[in-house]
Image 1: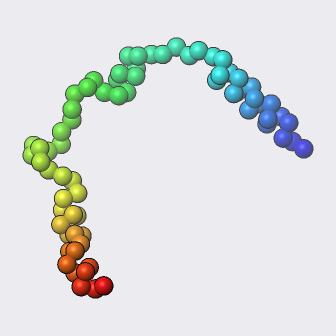
Image 2 (image 1 turned 45 degrees about the horizontal axis):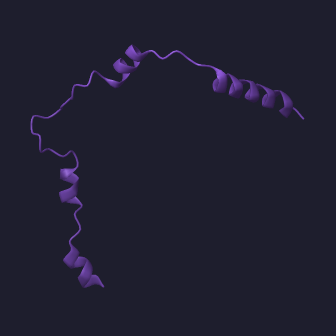
Length: 68
C-alpha cells in the first residue's frame, strides 16, 4: 500500500528532469574531459600494455588441430 508516495516522488523527479533546462558549464566540461593534450606513459610508441600477456597465453593453432 505504501507505493503511492514513492510513485508520486518518482513522477515529480521525472517531470523536473524532463522540463528543466539546466545551464551547461562548458569550462567545467572541458576541464573534466581534458585540455586535449595526449598523455603518454611510455616513450616507446609501439608499446602495448598487453603484449607480455599475449606472448604468455598465445594459442598455437597447430596444437589445437592435432588435438581434434
